[in-house]
Structures are given as structure tokens and as C-alpha cells.
Amino acid sequence: MPQAPDTAACTEAATAPPRTRRSKGARPALRQRIGRHALLSLVLTWALGSAVVLSMGNHFVVEAFDRALLDDAHALAAHVRGSGGTEGGDTEALRLDLTPREVGMLRFDPRETIWFAVFGGDGRFVAGDRHMPFALPPPGHGHVFANVTYGDHDLRRVSLRIDGPAPFVVVMAQTTSGRTQLLRRLLLYSGLVQLWLLVALGSWLLRDIERDLKPLADLQDAVEHRDAADLEPLPPALTHEATTSDVQRLGDAVDHLLGRLRKGLQDQREFAGTVAHELRTPLAGIRAQVEHALAQDDPAVWRSELLGIGQAEQRASRTVDQLLALARVTEGGLPLPMQTVALDALARSLLLRFLPRADERGVDLGAEGLDQPLPVRGDAGLIEGIVSNLLDNALRYGVRAAAAGDGPAPQITLSLAREGGFAVLRVADNGPGLDAALVAGPAHQRWTQGAAGQQLGLGAGLGLAIVERHAAAMGGRFALAAGPGRVGAVASVWLPLATAVS
Image (spheres, rainbow, N blue to C red):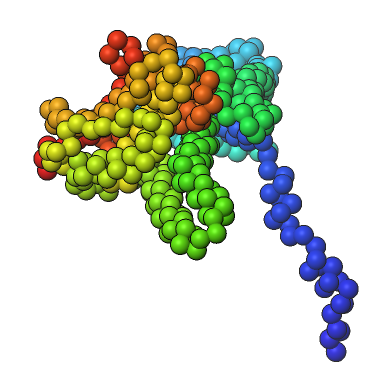
């Protein structure tokens, strides 16, 4: 009858961690794996080399001993005498012309036991060991070697045929203990030498593997101990000065990753700053309208201000949508959807929108070249952002001269013109101008203001950077220069004409 399963054992088995997780945590290090593979290859090579040495050693040992055995057979054949008086060879006339002492010397060997025999051409025994196994060499061969058993001994035998008036066969054999001992000694000494070389080579390889993988360990330590906010490139000693191209490529890949992360964070900060900058004006207008409405008791004024607030909210929402679209395009690498935009009409409408603000501040806001059609290829929202930022920037710094009363009346001029395949939009003012050190480029950087802007305490240094980025996204460019006589500033934007790219 089968027994019921143990519930406690089943529960313990179900809650126990799987073995695969433990095995994953015990993965060997790269240097250990490479060292294991290298040592395994060396051991296999050593074993193969030992087998080759054994085979070749056996071949040459057998060849050397066989040659000596054949020489002894030839020496013995030189002492065989025959009358040769009868045709066909008389075996009775064959004899071995050796004394017993000479025979003893022939048999002498300190390590082996030697047997010999002489047989006539017809196989009859002449001299030597009568019971020695006898075999005639095959036709066409003067001698033949063979391994035979004689009594309790394993022998190496040679049969030598001597042709002549009285042909005969000399058979010599010896035990194989000497050649076996020599082969063992050859294998032992060669194996010990190869084993020593294996240990030396293995130690050298492990040391070189450790040395070559040290830059990888240094790179790992540098990445592990780096602060999360540190996105600067790795030290050149870990990348450009690496000992191997693999570590250098890995370091370059980490540097590229850090660069992409750094650019992503920078884009996020820029986007946040751009949104704050672009929404500051409509939010300020909404706040002013709310304050004005709260100060009035006339419902008609409330309605008018509410309508203005609604329009400002729509402009702010449109601005946010445009900024999101620009962020997707510039940060995602997608092409910007372009269309034909009437730059003259767009500039005219924006100029009318800024007129109340200019009149309030006593600024003479004028225009030139708006009476001629000027179609450009771009995005209407981005072009509106360019014009709005340039006019807003001019109004902020053009007020200073009028407020101080130490110069001419503030004046701002928006002009349009054609230059080659581009439409040029310029906004010039006669305000305090720019520092000479900022005209060449730093004024285009985000969060950068000149001395006049810092004194006024207006803005955050984002307007011109936004203008430059919008212009570049549409295939144009932006430039900032001092006005005539270094009075005021002139901001110029080049946008491709629609007729030039169609």
C-alpha cells in the first residue's frame, strides 16, 4: 500500500530556493575561466605530445635494435663456410667456422639473451640452436624481421638469406627487455621535461592573463566607485592608454554611454528651463489680468479680463505643445515637419500683439520690409517663438535708456529682407547693447546674461539660446551683433525661403 507524501517535506521543497539561483551566484571569474581553458589546452597538448614521443621513440628504438641485430646476423654469416662442390648447394658441405669461445662471445649481452641458428637453403639445420623457429624471407627480400615466442621468452628475430653456390639462412633472435627498458626511460625523461615545461608555461600564462585582465578590473572598479551624479568621461589611463583594444573599446563604449546620459540630463534641464522661460510671460499676463479684475467691481470688466485670461491660457497651451514637439524632434532625432509659412504676415501679427506693451513702456516699435510677401520653409510655432523672444528681449533691455533719462528715446525695429536663398529677420534696438566679450558666442549659451541684464534683474538668460535652437532645427542660423556705433544690439535670424527649397 503506498504511503502518503510527507506534507512538511513537500512544503520545505516548495519553499526552498531553486538550485539554478545558487549556481548563478557561483559563476567563475573571467580570469579563472580563461586560466582553466588555457591549462586544459596545455594538458591536452602535453598528453598528445607524450603520445607522439612514445610512438616516435618506439619506432626509432626498434629501428636501432633491429639494425644491430641485422649487423650481428651479417657478422655470423661471414663465418659460414661451404665447399660449393655440388650443383645446387650441398648442405653437408656448410659449416660454422667459430670456436666455442667465439660462440660465447657472440651470445654475450649484459641485458639480453641471444639465440642463433644456421640453416641450409633447403631448411636443414647447420649450426646453432636446433629448435630455433625458422622462416625463410619472402622472395625479393634479403631479410625479414618478426616477433616470435621461444620457450617463455618474447623474441625479436631476423632471418637473413645469403645466396651463392651454397645458399643458407642465418637466424638470430634476442629478448626485448633492453629495448623496452630504453623506451620507458625515454618516455620518463621526456615526460618529466614536458611536465616541467607545462608547469612553467602554465605559470607564465596565468601571470600574463592576470596582467592583461587588470585594466578590465580597474575599469570595473572605476565604474563601481563612481558617484551617480558624475557623468564625466573615464580617465584616459583606463580607455585611450589601455593595453588591449578590447578594453579600449569597452572604455569608449562606457564613455559614449555616459555622454548620452549627460546629454539626456542636459536636454531635460534645457527643456525645463525653456518651458519656464516661455510660460513666464503668459503667466505674468494672466496674473496681471487677475489682479486688475479683482480690483474692479464692474462685471463687464470681469468678463473682458476673463476673455483675456482665456486667450492667454490658449497661447500658453500652444506654447507648451510647440515645446513638446521641439523636444521630440531635437532629442529623438526625428525630422521636423516643415511647411510654408508667410513670415511677413506672422511678423505683422506678432508686432501688433507687442504694440500695447511697447506703448506702455514708451518704446517706439516699428517695422521695415513687412509689405512684401516672404514665404519661408519652417514651423509656424517655432518661428513665432523666435520673433516673440527677440521682441521680448529687446523690450526688456530697451526700457533702460528711457527709464534712466540719459539717452535717446528707446526704439526697436523689426525688419525683413532677402539674402540669397534665405529670409533674414532682424530685431534692432538702441538699448545698452552687449558686452564685447559676449557678442562672439557666450551670449548664445543658456543662463548667460551680460552686465546690463544682470543690473536690470530681468530674464534668466534663456531667450537667445532658445532662438538659436529653434533656428537650427529649421535649417537656419542665428547671429547677434552690436548696433551701429556699438549702440544697442542687432539680432538676426536666417530662415530658408520656401521658393529656394521647393
